[in-house]
Length: 72
Image 1: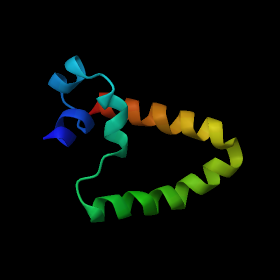
Image 2: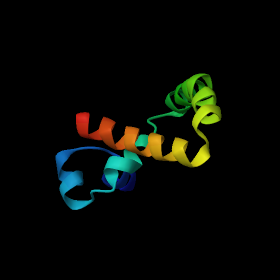
Image 3: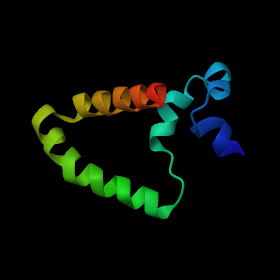
Image 4: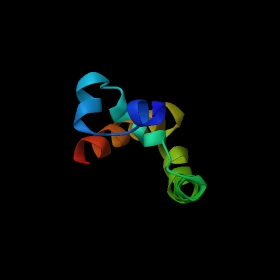
């Protein structure tokens, strides 16, 4: 219940806890979901990280997570 309230994206959570737009991007349903996302991050994120640097990568990742939550 705590995870659903603080790490999932829906309109009720957004109204009461707007930070869920960001925290949803680091939430995973199960171990397979986590491993799949880590694999994709490794495949694509390493090149982006090397090309733009750490601070810019975190900013890009954060805005990407927020945008994905809003699109959801």
